[in-house]
Image (cartoon, rainbow, N blue to C red; front, side, top):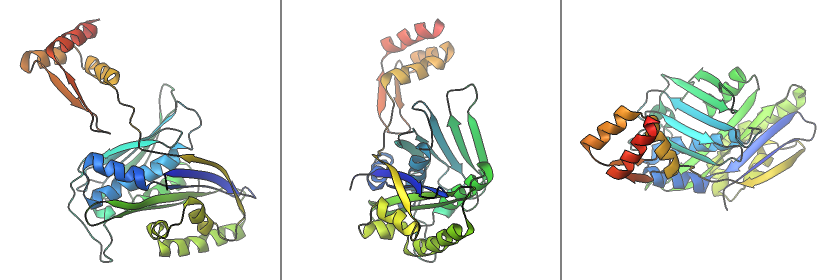
Length: 296
């Protein structure tokens, strides 16, 4: 199935939810960045939660940036999303050696580390973006975002994320959900949700996706015995917005001294996009032209 996202709410308005399948986009990111298994799992979880959180943005120009760095061997992950749920991202060390828990599952928490922060930046096009930050709780990412929503946005939430990476590094399943409890929720509804989440966590998201369950079926398990409606369903993907024009602007912003130094030292420049690894080449004549623009 193609990657897609759904969002909706319980019929009584007590809960709102997001759920998605992200297998293809996480595999694309793994290939772009040449991620080893535990790095693919960590980056994939961040991309998945980023896609869902992106759709919480209201306007087309709004941008969400997620950063996590616990000073583990992964050395930090950055993900950017728009309000359509399209994402891009990178991990600073994609070649983290395989780290396993006693259960045999990939140890994402050890790769990310816990000596640092999770940062959420929402750029609404105003003078200053909204910045929320919490200390990393476990590095497993889903736990960290659950705490982020509770502490920074005062919204009790449950975040479930899963990425299944085969030994040869291929991503065979990825997806997740976010369920948020609204102030009017009754204790009975919350109790049902908590019991359902216990069963979902025992099954694991990747197991459900591997069994052929789609996002609707997964949220059906999370909200079992709770009436709900789906308001929107949309395709999502790994989308980078880099271009030669953007790279030229980045070079110009470096200033006259830096550009002149490149011209005198190398007579050419090669810049690679962090998110998609596309390379942009500039010869001496092009750099001189950019230098003239920087002077202006």
